Image 1 (cartoon, rainbow, N blue to C red):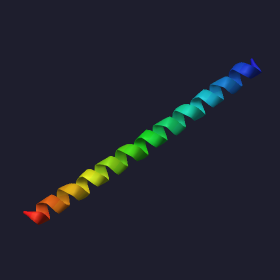
Image 2 (image 1 turned 180 degrees about the horizontal axis):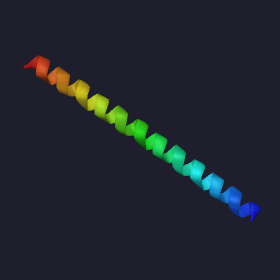
Image 3 (image 1 turned 60 degrees about the horizontal axis):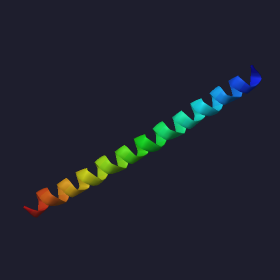
Length: 44
C-alpha cells in the first residue's frame, strides 16, 4: 500500500511538472509570435 501511494505521488508530481513545462513553453511561443507580429505590423 505504501509503495503504491508513493508511486502515485511521484506520478502526480511528474504530470504536474510536465504540464508546467508545457504551459511555459506555450506561453513563450505565443509571446514570441506576438512580438514577431508586432514587428511585422510596425514594418509595414
